[in-house]
Image (cartoon, rainbow, N blue to C red; front, side, top):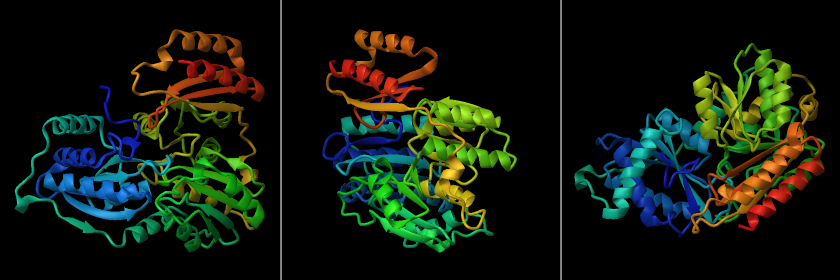
Length: 450
């Protein structure tokens, strides 16, 4: 069933414009409360990132939950995976994150986790949407005053999450001897990320850790690595770690200033897991580099591609019974350590590999076995108002078929709509970088003319 409001990662949009308005979010909170357990004893845990709009949307969502008779536990700015973890440890009915992840400050969104810390089920999502449609048409009701949900603030939430992250790192190892530059993207991990590495013994240089409500993801974080590369080289650091705005995505930089993306991180972790006796496979996505697939094949590790989005990677992992998956954008799922992508925990597993010897191993020495095939990715905006599907237009399909024929066995093409923004993602991968670039530009130009 196609959702009207939910994308691949909850509901997202520009603040002040439908659906990211206080009225809509209040009604969403009411609908979610009704579905997730308005039984008089239920509670939903709410976290957020550092966007200024988070205060407004948090209050609106809280009002809707209260009207439905659901209690609220507030944890303030914390990474998305922290909310998933805390929802489980506090035995909440659900966890809610108010964040637009890697998007600019003027966007925001709502995403849901079950009481077990996983994404809510399709059935729950559909039930919430059905009640939301009802609320948008007819308004909401309110339980009697004595049944209204009450709010409380969890004061030690950050400390609990820091200890949880540290618990995923081997007790016999430390990060002593490592100099790490950490870019928190002025986002949800600005208070916790550096502390995790410091408490494990690393020397940490923290950048982009001064959020002002509008500088989240602005020229920093996992989507813009320039300043991290510069800082790693200038400081003579061993490694750089970049998180996105809600800290569920990670990118890394080695001591030479070279970027290590999600595919390379996934390869490193799969290689280590295999050496430790893991017999399962790895789930990537349609965007995963061909080099990852070939490198895993050489290790004897089975590889499957899911649709783009960590939700789909997680579903494929559950279906296959495997424990390791991710996206080249930096969502890494380690189901032995958590139920959702967690940038800090993923980084600790890489740092563990670097710390097994003294002095620590260079990151580029670990990633050298995987060859990345050149990829060109172009984002093309399209109008949501027109209602037309750019990918279904004859001229787009004709050009796509021509390029696929030309590339044949030397590359591949992927066209898809973003699940979070009004964008068409044009990705071309080929043995030759110039060939990939030319094909992507050609296809993007056709889409732009629609």
